[in-house]
Image 1 (cartoon, one colour):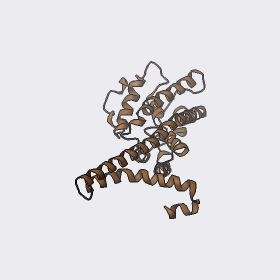
Image 2 (cartoon, helix red, strand yellow):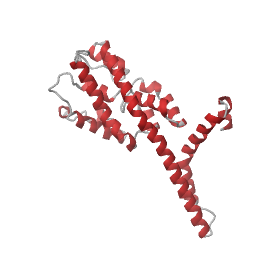
Image 3 (cartoon, helix red, strand yellow):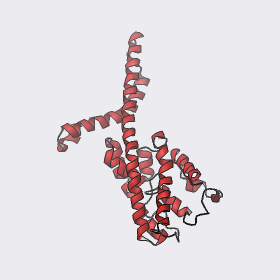
Image 4 (cartoon, one colour):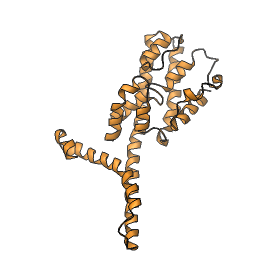
Length: 241
């Protein structure tokens, strides 16, 4: 049932909708494991919401640590005030995670992994059962503490976020590589379009040209910044760009 719950969460995240607002009037008992009193709705919300919907804080750290994309790193930085209070929309739409098939698997399986970490910690006697539901805007270590009145729960949540960050890193790197693939593909399309225009003795296909440039300029900007970061002193980089 936990798999069903997080699968549903991931699918709604993929299309940019917060499942909490969509399932308010649905019989939620279908999604929760009532045979284990430790597994409650607040715990499931914590498993999928460290920094907000889509595990925004582990995603932030993964982007800052391994992404080569200037734009994604910039989006991650400006999202900090929001994801601290569990409002992840800036990073979800800015990275983007929404409509991005690369992130479907971690969105489904990382919350399940987090749930297993919390359950194991509970079975080992490290964390107690949740006694209350915290405010949704609470930063996740505070959320974990208020939920159980246990500092250990906050540390377990931080450990789970650390594991999530490590697992998200290759997906972030894959997204950077996919950018380059799309860039190369669009450049190839442009080359074919120019050859076609030459064969038909036309100057250019303005519609195709403008669409391709819009799709490639963002990646081209990132490529230039990567080159400048390696070869131009930092104080001159932005001016040169």
